[in-house]
Length: 585
Ligand code: ADP
Ligand code: MG
Image (cartoon, rainbow, N blue to C red; front, side, top):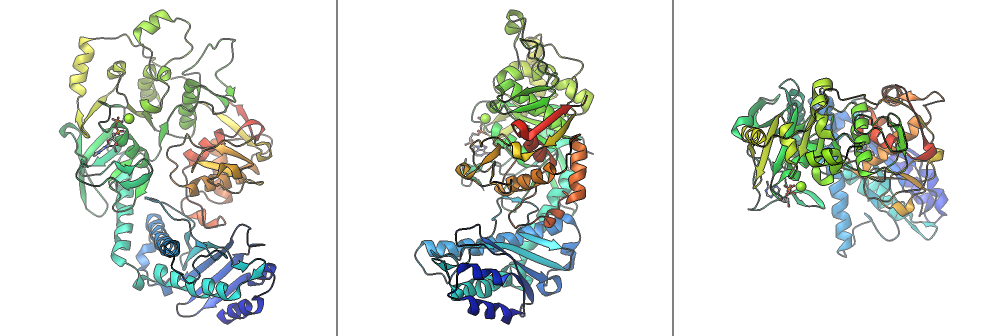
């Protein structure tokens, strides 16, 4: 019980660091009733921090039991309590930075508590977990304090027996937290889920509510832009739809229908901002984010050019054929892709992984993959590239895959879009008819293929020992320490890695960590024959259940859920001998 913890901490005070290992185990706290589980103890003060969990019986928390009723509620609840715990810890750390002593919350001799702090999306995360339904737990890391190699028992006591209890009280007891905010958090997540689930039936791939605030405070902040300059979203009359969420609230806004949609308008009028909101509309957002009623087809995938990426036996033949030298493009491999080959591989691999909506911004595209105008068609006869403009209609007609594309300067695209939206001072206008008039006035001769071509089908074998050197980037970088275990934001700490910088829909480093962990699980499974993407995901499901709630079965408190689409994209970006791929059809 709890006395045991105090007894241990007294006993090891002043001893060598290794004696901390004695703390491993479980301790029962009374008032509030919870279990402290010390799961991992670091070997020395500089090693990766120790892992602890505080597990509170559901009955002790006082949370309404209907919060357990659905996945989305549990996820939102866990997300909320993670935020509270995270903000308590952050506030204490700030205290210390302004020079106050802060009672062992963090210090030069260790004692830093940390929990993985969520961003602006409500996501399944292992920082807080509902296991079974009879308890809820918070998972922390803590660096146990020492002076040199000597244990500071008193400080460790402050951390584990005082500060941790305070976090449990404030974050996991319903009576002590802001119940209204919690209620709103859960309702908001449910509402977003409900709006998103209606899209397909209504023939839509996205919905943006009137009044939504899309722009962000800055390129480095996901907080909403505030102040008088913000223009709230307003749907054009022609595209206005009203959706009613599961709790009976109705939302009027712009519905983007399936098919090919062009976002156009002058530079700086808000095109990319709208597209980014669509990219992140696959996730639920926290109340106050401004995008709480912006929802997108959950399989929507951002496609960009990504020159330099590796490609392993991907069929890019719909877009590229007849390369000089006769190199095959039905199973195309390279260690250093060009803009157009990388972009066509990104499209094909997204389709392979089940994407039904492509999101594209000309700002981040290879122009020669988007279009080839009449003059170039006439002049250059041996062009291996068939641009997307010639395929995008067939892609929809044949495979039901929609495209939303931001185009400012390529007028040929007007002829292939079903719907054309012009952004004017951040306000969208439906100019479909007007644009079709322009097309009749200046008819072009863009060749449109009736058939899209083949979709890739590959089988994968993964061997992480074969990984090559790292590629630098920030939060989307999986840096692999010896055994692919961890994603860190400092590439110099990596021994090898996978560059995920091209994946715009990864929003937290915790997602990169999850990808690292899942790749490791995959690596043990693929065998000599290789597995298709579908088989691979099924295998993972059997192993750990990759569905939203069973992330909990994974160790550690710093993992955040990712879609199979991002996992598949990471897999395709493994390099060299790490990935053996056969094209199976
Ligand atoms: P484009 O892609 O059309 O060139 P951006 O989407 O990059 O334009 O937007 C240009 C600038 O306008 C950005 O700084 C963005 O934050 C800001 N912005 C976008 N939408 C709005 C809005 N609704 N209200 C206020 N500012 C906005
Ligand atoms: Mg732009």
